[in-house]
Length: 259
Image (cartoon, rainbow, N blue to C red; front, top):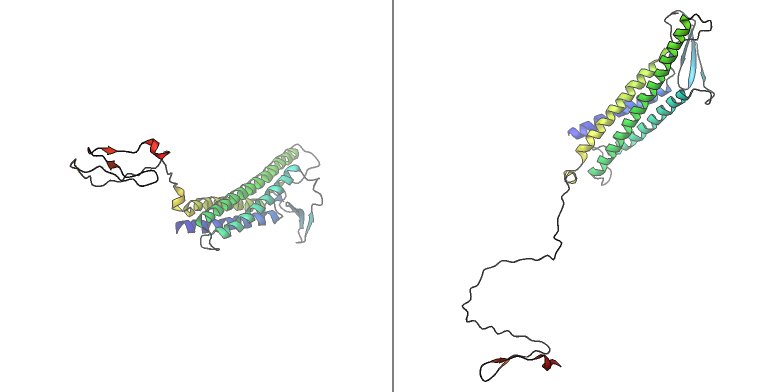
């Protein structure tokens, strides 16, 4: 029962993590304009992975997608790639995990096959969570670097001061989603051990004798008196019954009698 609960809980937590990664990737508020020095403004800007938006004080919002790929920074494109890889691995892990659930029977699938599928889905969830956490952390590092560079230019009294951007809500959603996917993958890997059959955990090794197999049969020992006749009858081609001579001796055929 504990194995089933662990597996189902891992599936649910991983599903929430993958869904959070999809939502975080699609959100536009990865970076928002810092309003610390100017709390009252007519224009509020925020950016995402796919487009940048401008919101006016009247409530009208206009978004424009990034029409270029080569013009974007390399780290920005790396964040995109990491999030997409995490989503793809998470979806594949969910598909594998559905068929690996212990409460679902498909044909004559053995427990060992379900254990392997559970381990595979758990590894996929772990990698997906790491990709999401890494992508969000890289984007956050870019924001921190640009923020302090803009702050330094502001204190130096430069005229062309760019807007400073801070963390958006999408970053926190991505961090939480990546953590959930990572925890769900670990739970799936732990549930894999409980699905392995007992007989396959300990494999017995049989040792066979290298020589000829000789069987010994024990039985009661019959003690002889020493006076039993020792005559044996052999029947076959070239053998005849031994004839006794007149003096009581036995005569055996020689090797020249068979020629």
